[in-house]
Amino acid sequence: MVVLGIESTAHTASVGIVDERAEVLGLASDMYRPALGGIHPREAANHHVEVLPGLVEQALERARVRPSEVDAVAFSQGPGLGPCLRAGATVARVLSLAWKRPLVPVNHCVAHVEIARVLSGLDDPLLLYASGGNTQVIAYGRGRYRVLGETLDIGVGNFLDKLWIGLGGTFPGGPALEAEARTGTELHALPYSVHGMDVAFSGMLTATLALHAKGTPRPDLAYSVETTAYAMLTEITERALAHRGRNSVVLGGGVACNERLRGMVRAMVEGRGGTMFAPPRSLCVDNGAMIAWTGHLAHRAGVSVDVPDSAVLPRQRTDLVSTPWRAG
Ligand code: ATP
Ligand code: FE2
Image 1: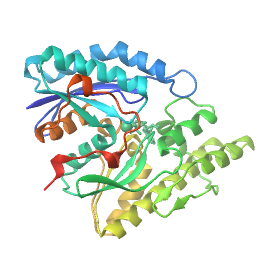
Image 2 (image 1 turned 90 degrees about the horizontal axis):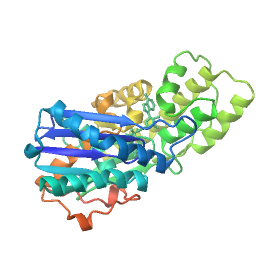
Image 3 (image 1 turned 120 degrees about the horizontal axis):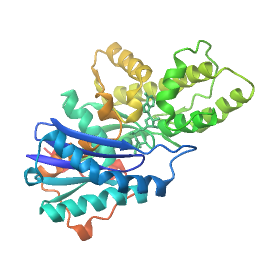
Image 4 (image 1 turned 120 degrees about the vertical axis):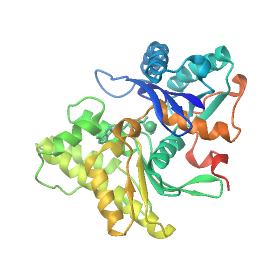
């Protein structure tokens, strides 16, 4: 069985084609990069409308799959930026109607989790989902993915992006800060905001920009920010493991590309005798393959929607999505 998945929640338009063993047969992505500042939702949506038809063709070509061989069309229903979500949903509806195939709605956050889980081979790991808009520690329990801890203000990726723009860079900030931090040597004290299993980043954003205004070298700021922010994420992940009596952790989301974060979580998990897994970078960032794979799981469990009922849900939460494929 082959599912085509469409991702368009924020900056990235992507189409993935995945089979029933989670093999990625074809993936084609295109990221909207604003010349200045953060993401403008309407401009990002216009970008997605322009590139999505070509990405569908590219993904099919790469997968060597004909439209008639696609069994279902999945799309990111939420959470995300309304105009961007609608761009992807519209393309998915058109394909579903034209190809006469079921339309399967997928939650973007659950998709980050499911692709990481299947690739890890771990049945029931704890998940650290660290991306632009979201930062959550997640465990499965009684029919849902439960959020044990999360950011109280902005997602860690949005924090890194805002900070990098404030330091004179352009979006996305996470990868650029990672490169900059490699030459940093001096660790500056920054607000370390852990509240139980929750975290917050806005204090660190203000404090780092204040140090920048005083002339602190950018590599030292990047190094200090990575050290502090990723230590916070590692701490809440460890607390959640201890509470749940678990050992293994899977990482997902764009910030899970980061080597420092991977290293810190791995050291903590291995210290507890557990296993840490992070997917390849192309499947950590937003991608259509994770939507296609979660579409598979949902479709097999009987989930599909009619076009009139397929409205996007910009504020849909991880812990409000039912996951019938995990029942029993
Ligand atoms: P979501 O909708 O899941 O909250 P998102 O739409 O922002 O997330 P993702 O592609 O999952 O998209 O994550 C993008 C984020 O990942 C950006 O904030 C980017 O700066 C960050 N990122 C990407 N690579 C790295 C890296 N190497 N180190 C740190 N952050 C990174
Ligand atoms: Fe994402």
